[in-house]
Length: 204
Image 1 (cartoon, helix red, strand yellow):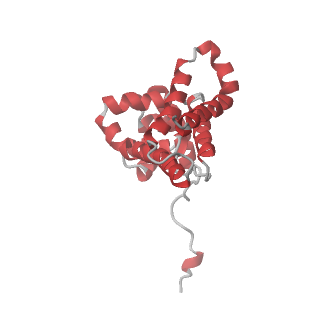
Image 2: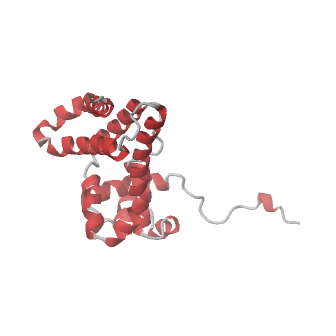
């Protein structure tokens, strides 16, 4: 009688660190080269993970890009502190950290690639929509809690915060980048406070 429980497993055990290594390499690769330089061959060369192993996890390079963005760029849906000011500050801190970090050019790569490559636009559509909807949901929750006046435009609130941060980072000259990074969390707080002061101001 064969003891199947004691029989050795065939094949190599799955390496739990593969996805982390791949995501780290993929976000770095995409930030430097964009879609034109984003390939399984390059990821394999950097990580040593074979193409067959990559294809088992991600059937296309666009699928790998989307999962990489979710794992290593940013998501918004998990921000919910119960208070709008704290939600927006968390959002601001996350954006400032990502945009001033070593992979900050991912933002620009996505903007360009979604315009130049249909496959990138289509593959990332759900990811980008999730970011937008989660941001608007912050403001809608604040209206429901009475933190914002009824009728407040949720898109406007998020656009002011996100757009202000993007402009701040992109408009800062390279020689002032280190100083900006030292003060960026304070800047995020001031921006959020300014947006909320305007949103909650009562007209005469």
